[in-house]
Image 1 (tube, protein in one colour):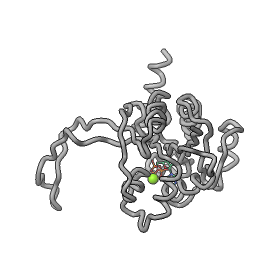
Image 2: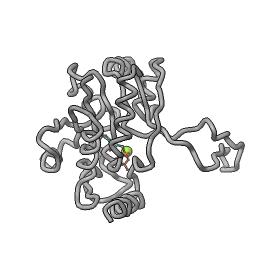
Image 3: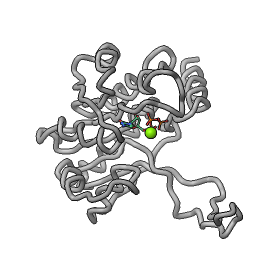
Image 4: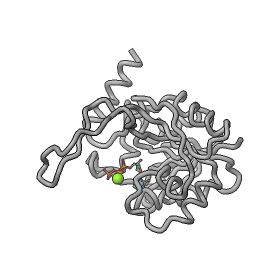
Length: 223
Ligand code: CTP
Ligand code: MG
């Protein structure tokens, strides 16, 4: 099984507000994207394709091993993933789609996704339980009802797919507006999406507090 990972790294990181693309922002001195790529290789993928902001290609090349393929991303995450998928090409049996913004994903979490694909799953996502009470509110912000949380899950990346299944699902997609991840694209095409346990360390860095927590986490692991 030849596994190619696509790392979505072409975003600007406007909510982090670091003044440079989020994937290049350092965590313990190394760019987020370098951490994410290391985790994918350590978890067992064979090749990595990184989608980059076109104007920043040189900075990404300097931050990553020469074996990593760089491709220009698009204006949306969906467009970036499609560019990565085209670059991954038919040599991939399976593809993993990962966010550069999840630098501390443990190799085990990657391996669980690959194992599910090797076992025959066509689509697999890492998930965690919801621990907070979760409610629906009306237009005035008043609680309308509590949502039973036992069946709720938070979905992370890397998400894994049979390559041909993901390519066909993107080709069949009419309107990506409501879809926030790749699993939603294959589900819209009627493909069942399996789940495996995710990991809290795969948390996405979105706002400055998330980066501060990641710095602390790296410091604790190192000491
Ligand atoms: N991404 C991408 N191409 C885009 C937009 C996002 O490859 N056009 C990537 C980001 O680089 C990131 C991942 O998708 O690794 C998840 O997106 P998000 O956390 O929203 O990152 P940004 O879009 O960069 O951040 P923001 O929304 O705060 O601007
Ligand atoms: Mg974004």
